[in-house]
Length: 184
Image: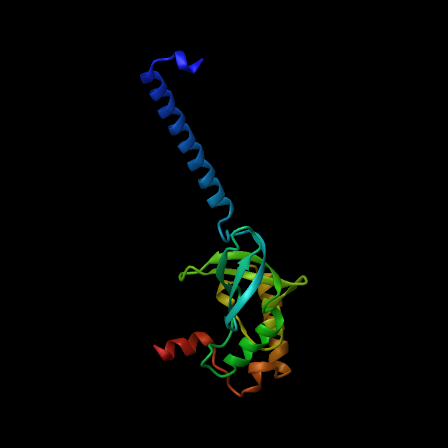
């Protein structure tokens, strides 16, 4: 049937089919790229923690086909820097709780360094709140918009301070925010 058609028409048909195929491949790749994007604000993901940078930053990879890996920062808390007093202990604590384990991450924002910021859950327990409760991190008051959540987090911090847990054992612990300013 196609052998009866002129060669120029066959070439034109072949070119059109090639263009249609390229367009379909392009559209499928755009869809898959968007579908497997590592993390999106406002979404919740299951991932496995692969490394801990410090007390409030970790790297994890999403449980999808690409195993998208990204750095995550804990929302609403500020842990001591690694070189700061109680910094290594804070990192050790979060490592004991989530390293090489599956966690659920609720992305709340993306910070100025391109890291995703979120609440990390392990067995329905917020690791962000756990860090404050155990005295391993301060509440980052400036970033909590919900007054009830702020009140809850501040109550956890005050309880840890009164019980002298973690970094509150020191007489005058320095906030990481102030420590970073001094280091500049």
